[in-house]
Structures are given as structure tokens and as C-alpha cells.
Length: 272
Ligand SMILES: C[S@@+](CC[C@H](N)C(=O)[O-])C[C@H]1O[C@@H](n2cnc3c(N)ncnc32)[C@H](O)[C@@H]1O
Image 1 (cartoon, helix red, strand yellow):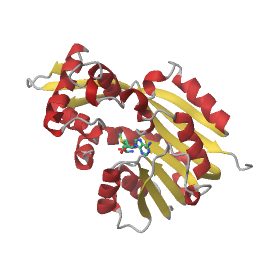
Image 2 (cartoon, helix red, strand yellow):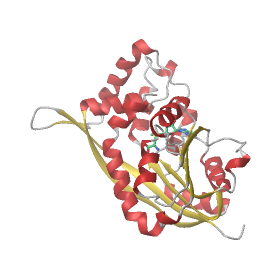
Image 3 (tube, protein in one colour):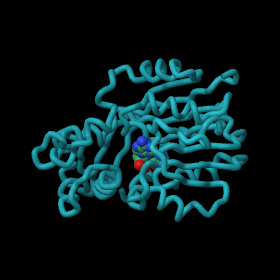
């Protein structure tokens, strides 16, 4: 994991996130949440932005992530604010700490849970974290391009041996095509009222360096350090085979990718 590289290479993603938050800001009533938890907070920059830009009445915002390196970075850079705390936690845990149960007015999670296999457990834990009447606002990357690239690389004899955790850690591949219906049913089964669950298509363009940095910062495979650059460069070969690299008017490579995002806005009933 490379927290700083992740922040630098995801500027375009932050624009997308902020546009969507603007769109939902009235519906969500962001001013009313006192206690909030952000699941899969990564390096903490988005969590920090959320607090300063939208959550003006929030007294406690906790960012959780299962990567010790991400949490260390978040604490070092944003942890001085007494209203902002970071802690290591795997959201798929079967032992959700008592201190995180029935505590939060809002649970957020951005671009995290697509890399996990047990989405039911994740939604159950999020439900348990919410106070009655609390809101859930989650982005799930779907048809997610790194996963499509990794699927290809995991069949390559050079990389297969280092990518054993690929099948178990990515649920997108195992899901049926009707994700929106699937997520809606799952959320209702757990007890959520589903206000909206929609799928939207986004297009993002990256220059070569930003794209390679992003790929380096998001993969979780045990690639030996001396082979890592080679591994990352092979991502470009896969993209070439998908015809996703264009040359712009200045002769520079441009990588344009379409991806889908499922946006969930749900709520835990007051009577539970
Ligand atoms: C693509 S990053 C998104 C970071 C941040 N939310 C953002 O929007 O920039 C996904 C994060 O989810 C974390 N993550 C993946 N699986 C997780 C799990 N089971 N529990 C908690 N965090 C997890 C990863 O460590 C990573 O930091």
C-alpha cells in the first residue's frame, strides 16, 4: 500500500465523489449527523474533507480501514483534529466491537467494499453500527477496471503465483449481472429501508503516469518488490489488448475507462 501515491493518483476520483455528494447533500441532510463512521477510509484525506466540507455539526468522525499502513498515514496527517479518529478494523469481522454498535447517525463507505467477498457481512456490520434512524451512504465500484485487469493478469503464468488471494478477495466477479436488485434485496433482508440504490456510469481519463501510480497504490498482491514495476507495466499490456489506450494530440498516452458505480442510500428504522 502506498497512501501518498494513492492520494496523488486519485484526484479525478475525488472530483467524482464531490459531485455526487453535492447531488445527495440535501437528501442526506449532512448537517444533522453528530456521530459518523467512514468504512475503508484509506489514507484519510476523503474522511478529512468530508468533515470539513459537509459535516459541520459532527462531533465525532471515525475512519476505519483494515490496512495498518493506511491508518498510520491517516493518523499522522489528519489525526490532530480531536473530532477525527482513525482505527484499524476489518469490516468483514464477525466480532464487531461493542463500542461501535448502535453508535452512529451515518455510515459512509467510498470505493471500498468491491474488493471484499462477504458483502452480506459488511452490510450487517454497517447496520449494527447505526443507531435506529441512522443513514447509510455507500459507493460500490462495479464493473471495476482494476478487477478486470487483475482477472487477466491472474491467468498469466508470470503473476499467477503471487495472486492467489485474487478470487477470494473480489466479489464483483462472482455477482450476477443485476447488482442493483441484488444489493437492494440484501439490504432489505438485513433490515434497511432502501431510499435509493442506483447504478451510474462514469468515464475517467488518466495519463500514463497517474494510471500506473494508481495501479501501484491499489493492488494488494504479494508481488516481490523487485518485480513490482514489471507487474504494474503489464497492466498497460492488458489495457492495450482491450483497446483502452489512445494517443492524444500531443502524442501522449491517454487511458480512458468507463466504470459503474452503485450508490446506496438506506436507513435503519427508528423501531428496532
Ligand atoms: C480504493 S481505497 C478507498 C479509500 C477511500 N475511501 C477513498 O475513497 O479514497 C479502498 C480502501 O478500503 C480498504 N479495505 C479493503 N477491504 C477492507 C476491509 N475488509 N475492511 C476495512 N477496510 C478495507 C483498503 O485498505 C483501502 O484503503
